[in-house]
Length: 380
Image (cartoon, rainbow, N blue to C red; front, side, top):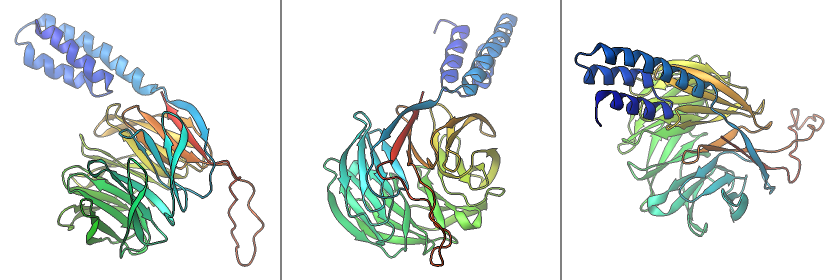
């Protein structure tokens, strides 16, 4: 760089493109590069105003909309899906099987059968394997990421494995088991069960901080529990009140934040290093999944009961603003973010009227319209 003024402009420009904190960065650059001049102070004021307005404008209009609705049909309900930027595939849970959809072709290119009661899919790219939590079979199906062929089925002791993640720090897969209130650790190199983490309550989704710590929503206790991925020892638990029955969980590793989506229409933001809530943000009704885009500093909540996607901008590590509620489709409650393209994939379907109540089934659910299962694609 030729001078401090050019450095200020470049730093502020880069940060603004990422929706970060341009004014704060600019002020820091001025202090460190302007030992004397009143001219630089005036320049700083002008640039601060310009970049602040630009950042506000970008944050208020992130530009998300429904890009496509891909009707892929097939049998079965659904839970989690996983949009993988490495393979270019979306892995979609469908009751007793997993559909694999190509992002480029927007069509199903493979099907992984016999995943009984499937909830989620985790990917361990360094081992070339994927892992599926088979909730009604008390097992984990291991499959090959190239051929999508089943390699083996791992039986576990945890009851109803639900959420599942891969932690690249410990090289372990973790299932979070709803009925036994614990987590199972599996060595991805050997596909052997290496231990269990007792949890005080029903675990929902979880995240890894990439440094050996795992955090999980405890749905029925209104808490988050953190444990060591290697020793499997619980390290901390904190309340996420006023959030209730939190399910989806997303993470901002840079600023040490967790985003829990709760059933009472709140996104609860926690500082996971301090173990405390720092904010709560209004979201839509019926949330089930969460996402975070680190480049754009945006958090997402998929709200199936009203068919919206709430978008929240991280203005600062303790300040958050709802910038949009994109209309998606009723029942689109689960989602996955492709951070490479900033595209979001949601599962949804059409439903008919609920049948009449009976003694055996006093609260019947509406039946899914055959062939109506759809992947809703939201992007900019």
